[in-house]
Length: 191
Image (cartoon, rainbow, N blue to C red; front, side):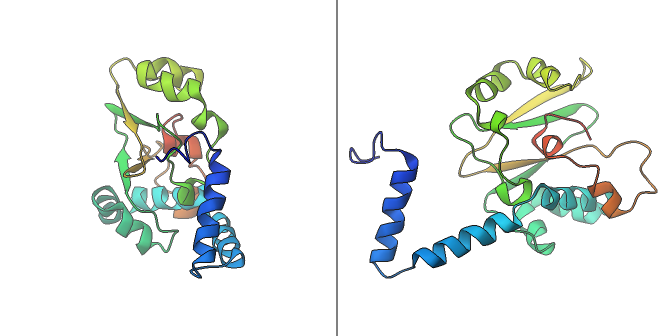
């Protein structure tokens, strides 16, 4: 980071970048606003819930989602996310996502991040004492369940594939999607 940018508020740095792009004739304020509005309009937790529900009912899709999340996201015509990795909860492993450096987060699938996700307390504590933090969210895991904490970055963002709830074999994909929460896809809640 150059000395000119050090300590500058992020919004001011972003605006300088936008201005440079506009001055170079690469875009306009209107185009940037339109892109942002379009992105945020498609950024909803229901997008991720649709992915999860499809994975619960379609084993082939689940395998593709776990091996190449970007392709699976595109297959469902959802907002494209680079560097997405989906991690699956099982009976013996529970996954939880954090970004200790910033707030790297798959906005297109989960909508805007919750304030607690960006808080220093969550970001530092979930790495050191994940079981205690999850208990504070109301998620009490069996002591035999191993907890894996995934630290997101700009190079790799994570989405948790929660376990399918028991007693749901007769539910449709839409009914299953309605059960999925943003917290479940971050790993701070069970579905």
